Image 1 (cartoon, rainbow, N blue to C red):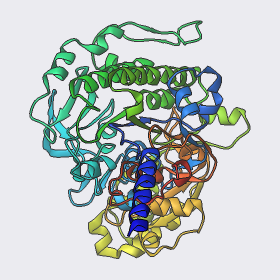
Image 2: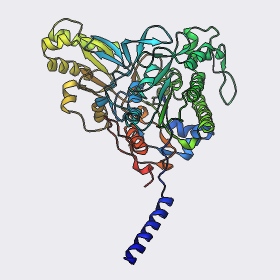
Image 3: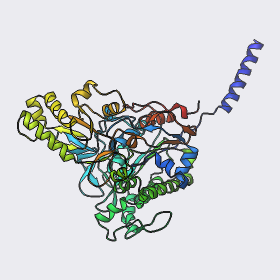
Image 4: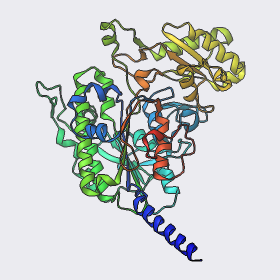
Amino acid sequence: MKKTILGLAAYASLSCIWAQTHVAPARPKLLLMIAVDQFRYDYLTRFRKEYNSGLAQLLTQGAVFTNANYEHMPTVTAVGHATMLTGASPVMSGIVANDWYEKEIGKITTSVADEKSELVGGDGIGSTPKRLMVSTVADEIKMSGRGESKTIGMSLKDRSAILLPGRMADASYWFAEENGSWVTSTWYMQQLPKWVADHNAKRPADQYLGKQWVPIWGGSPLHKLPAIPDTMFYSNVEKSPYGNDILEEFAELAIENEKLGQHAGIDVLTVSFSSNDKVGHAYGPDSPEARDLSVRTDRVLGKLFAYLDKKIGMKNVLVALTADHGVPPMPEVSEKRKMPGGRLKDKDFADLVDKTLSAKFGPGKWSVGKKGEQIYIEPALLEQYGAEKVRTAAAEALRNFPHVLRVYTKDQLLRGQITPDKVGTRTANGYHPVRGADVVVVLEPYWMYGTDTTSHGAPFNYDTHVPLILMGQGVKPGKYHQAAAVNDLAPTLATILEVEVPAGSMGRVLSEALPH
């Protein structure tokens, strides 16, 4: 008996010592999800010497995945943002593009359009996450029931503000070019909170009226903003570094007024910086504008981190950063480099489909809702002449169009008849059986749709390869060169935060960056 008592005492003593030395780390109080729209991975390395603030902090204190890619096509804003916190590609999420032809209503719709919702803070139809078919990490945090938590999403773009946090967000705010205000929709609330209304009354963007965009390294101005506060001015603010500045300022206000990081549960703030995309489209990834905005992104993130450190302490914040897609060079730049590439017109593809199918089956308006690589065919004509026969005929014609690499029909994609490589897999992952197009076109590398700018959407590395960085509690800093996907972010965050993995997640846990 005495030996037993002594043994139990020793066990209890050892257990106490183990408990003292193996204290479970406290959960973060705030998940800060940062998206930088159209931020190629190589912006991290190309401009590294110029980073000394937020991006530098992430690169030195975070887990940096150097080979993270999107595993879907098209690589566009809505799809990328819908993937980040769901882990779901379009085949699962239902977000197949920025906009697409919806057969049920017989017209093109955007990824967040909702005619049953109204704009709050402006006039017109509202935007909502109703077309998102799966949960996000933020949704799972709320459904876990671990105390009150708040989720706030924000961006200059509605789809970025809405799809990233998910369906259960307490609020999503976006910037209205029409009046220069932050707005939301009746999905979230019937009127703006006082702090948002008060901020709008101060006309936050108007401080940049007539402002010159001088690069951070000095020299001649790159551009000058209009001096009249109208739609043209507000759209130009978005296409300048000052769009990111007004977003960061709004984020600070949300942290303060919504008391983010101060609730019993885990709060979530998603911030998507859209100005990088607008600048990238207009001037290309090799422009001084792109370089300057990348360096300014480092500074604006540093400002946000410093504010969070002051308010709740960065030790209480789990940060994730990625981008929704990359971008290829301007075709004119590629030509000077003796690289392939050029521009094609959407209309030429639609005209070819109409001409081919009219000649083979009979006259009619065959193509509807042509959007880039996705070609939809009039449902009534498909039914009349045989859907698979019609799609096959359209695909055969498109395969002979100059600079088309591959063409897949809906029937091929649903049967899994794809080329077993990255292009085929990414095309299949980007295809939803209900919302997907009748014919999907993949252009040759560096070829794009459009007339005078650069664009994105391809399944190639220049559009799929993006930064992926985690920093904070439960993360082991370092560089990780293993192949990763942005789909891996959601299950990894869910594991760190000890909540259920989102329903449509297609990724793995990035266990190499988690302490054992």
